[in-house]
Amino acid sequence: MSLRHGLLGLLAEGPASGYDLARRFQEVLGQIWPAQHPKIYAELGRLADDGLIEVDSEGPRRRKAYRITEAGLDEIRSWLASGEVDHTMRLQSLLRSLFFWLMDPDDLRRHLDDEARFFAESAERYRAYAQAKDRGDFGDSPQTRSMRITIEAAVRLYQALADWAEWAKTVPPPAEK
Amino acid sequence: MSLRHGLLGLLAEGPASGYDLARRFQEVLGQIWPAQHPKIYAELGRLADDGLIEVDSEGPRRRKAYRITEAGLDEIRSWLASGEVDHTMRLQSLLRSLFFWLMDPDDLRRHLDDEARFFAESAERYRAYAQAKDRGDFGDSPQTRSMRITIEAAVRLYQALADWAEWAKTVPPPAEK
DNA sequence: AAGCGCATGTAAAGGGTTACATGATTGC
DNA sequence: GCAATCATGTAACCCTTTACATGCGCTT
Image (cartoon, rainbow over all chains, first blue to last red; front, top):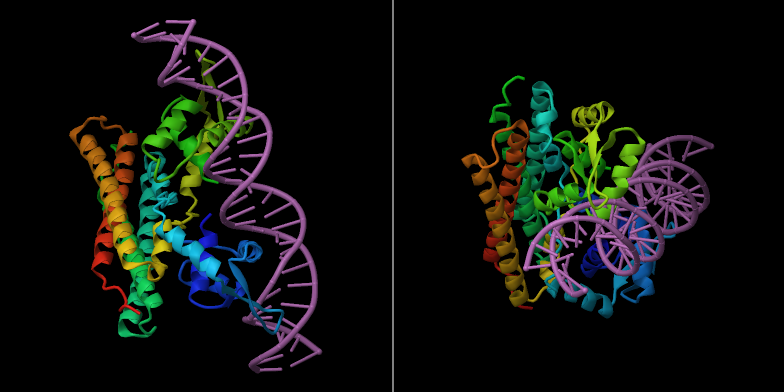
C-alpha cells in the first residue's frame, strides 16, 4: 500500500487534483511507479474519509483539488521514518533473461538490441531531466532537490541495465545442439 | 501475467512440483520476482487445465510433479519471441526518495545507511552466486548460462543502487528552515 | 511420540489495470 | 458548431498476498 503514501507525499508539496496527480505520476514516475487514474481517485476518496487530506478548492469542470492535513503530514512522515522498505522489484526483463537458453540466438540478439535501446533511451531521458534541474530550470526548492535524487537513481538504474544488455550480447550462446 | 510464464520457463528445465518451484522462486528470484505458494499451486492448476503442463509423477506426501508439454514449450517460446516486455519496476526506494525533503536530516542519513547496506549486501550475495557459477559449481548447461546472465543483472542493479545511496548521502540537505 | 520439514491447498482481502461512461470547458 | 482536452468516476476483472487448514513422512 504505497500509492497511498505516494499521493500523500505529492500533496505535501501543495494542493492538487486527482487529474494533476495522475499527470505527475505519469510524467516523472511513469516507469518507476505507475498509477492509473481510477486507483488515484479511489485512494483520494479514502484519504479524505480518513481525514489525511481535505478538499482545498473546487474549480471548473467539477475539478476538486485536495490539500494535505496535519494528520496526513504525520502519516507520511511516520511512513518515511519507519524503516520497513519493500525492496522487491519484479523486473520482467530479468525474469525473461532466465529463459534466454530457450530462445533462438537471432531472436535473442534482436531482443537484447531492443532492451539495450530501451534502457539507454530511458537513461538518456532521465539524464536530460537531471541536466535541466542542474541548470536551474526547476528552481531549487527542497522538493526539486529530492526529485534530483530520484532522477539520479533512475539514470543509474537504466544505465546499469543498458550496460547489462550490451554485455549480455557478448556472452557466447551455448554451442549449437 | 508473468508468473504463468515464469513457471513454464522453470518447468522447461525439467519436471518439478509446486513446492520445488516455490523454493526456486524464493532462492534465485526472491527479490526480483517474488511468488507465494498459493499463487503457484493455483497457476499450475490452470496451466494443467490448458494443457501446457501435465502431471509427470506423484510421490510421497501427495507430491505432484509437473512436466511441460509441447504446447507449453510453444507458449513460452512465443512469449519470449513476442517483443512485448513490461518495463515497469515499482521500486519503493525510488518513490520514497521523492519525499526525502519531508524527512529529518538525521532520519534520512540513517535511512540512506540502511538502504546502502541492504543494496550492497544484495549485490554481494549475487556476486557470490556469480563466482560460484564461474568456478563451475553449477556446471555449464545452457540453463545455468542464462542464470549467469540474470545474476549479472542483479549484481549490476544492486551495485548501482548501493552507489546511488552512498552518493545521496553526499548531497547537502536543504538549509535549515 | 514429538517435532520438523515436506507438500498442497482454500478463502478472504488487498492492490492494480482496463474498459466503460459521462460531462464541462476551451480553442478553433 | 466541433474537436480536443480537462476532469471524474464506476464496474469488472486480474493478480498477489496473508491467513487459515490439513496431512504425510522422516528423524530423534
